Image 1 (cartoon, protein in one colour):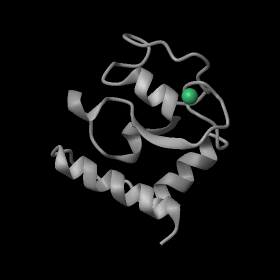
Image 2 (image 1 turned 180 degrees about the horizontal axis):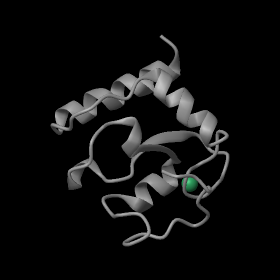
Image 3 (image 1 turned 60 degrees about the vertical axis):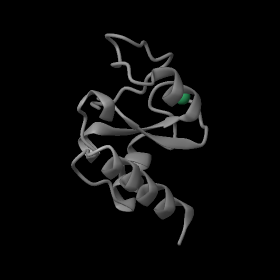
Amino acid sequence: MNPLKVRAYSSQRRARLVGASGGFMPSDWQRQYARQGGLCRWCGKAAPLTIDHILPLARGGTHTPANIVLACAACNSAKGRRLVYSEWQPPNPLPLDN
Ligand SMILES: [Zn+2]
C-alpha cells in the first residue's frame, strides 16, 4: 500500500475511534493536495502534510472532505482544537474556500 493510502486510512480509523461520521479517501487527499498546490493550507509552506479538520473532531466536526484540509505538522499542532480565524490566526493561509 502506498504511503498516501496509509495516511488516509489511518486517519479514517482515528476518526472512527472518536465517533466522527464521514469518510476521507485517498482520492480526496489527492484532490485537496492538488487544490493546495502541495502547500500547507495555513502557512503556505511546502512541508509534509497531515490531515487537519477545519472544525476539530473534538468540537463536533466531521471526517469529510468539506471539513478537511492538508496542513503541516507545525500548523496542525499549533491549531489544535481551536477554530481557525476566530481562535487561531493562520500565519499565511492559502486563498481557498475551505
Ligand atoms: Zn503550516
